[in-house]
Length: 253
Ligand SMILES: NC(=O)c1ccc[n+]([C@@H]2O[C@H](COP(=O)([O-])OP(=O)(O)OC[C@H]3O[C@@H](n4cnc5c(N)ncnc54)[C@H](OP(=O)(O)O)[C@@H]3O)[C@@H](O)[C@H]2O)c1
Image (cartoon, rainbow, N blue to C red; front, side, top):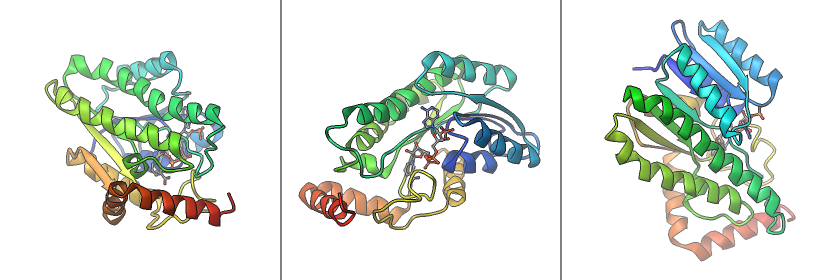
């Protein structure tokens, strides 16, 4: 069954935007959050045009209090069935080891921002003993990638969080899914100066994610070829490092 009351962080762009549209239809209630007001409102208007009732909030997910308020208010309007903790940032392969503030910002957004969203979602789902939380991880979380170490670390931590939470939440009637995309064509990587093999469009990613959530899948990883390739590379760390460093050198880093 397609959920009717859905909340999304990172809805103003890319995968979040495509997901918002994928859930939009008459009878659906969407709570959409992002930081860019103009882009967020454009997405909201497109969702309304498909018949959904939409509320929006400008939200920085690093702000736990604001995230909690957004989720609580959305739940009061329409009890939440699915919460997508999707907001995230990356720096391609440009995370300089000396730039710890950048790495910190990535971890604060991707890991702690997601944790804030999980906390708020569970606060409303626990009493009703139902609901589904979806975390956007990444295939980059399967192993630390040189030049993308903070991003990989944040996504690896989300994987561990989701794996650990899964059985405990199941006992409370709450589902959790971990989305691990490969490359999706979004502003995050559309100007990438490194290879983005098997990159797919955000609409295709959203369709795969929605189907996975509807089937109650825990791991929603795609494309499968890249999943298995990444798993193999993670088993051979020196090879992965050589490939990553060669890619960085070719890009002139
Ligand atoms: N694209 C890929 O190839 C790929 C692959 C694997 C995983 N992912 C993951 O997919 C998720 C969505 O990324 P995307 O590719 O769709 O990138 P995107 O187009 O850049 O969208 C990122 C979204 O996150 C929001 N966001 C960023 N920082 C935020 C913050 N501090 N507080 C609240 N919202 C924040 C952005 O809001 P504003 O723009 O309004 O600031 C935007 O809506 C991310 O978690 C990313 O790591 C992407």
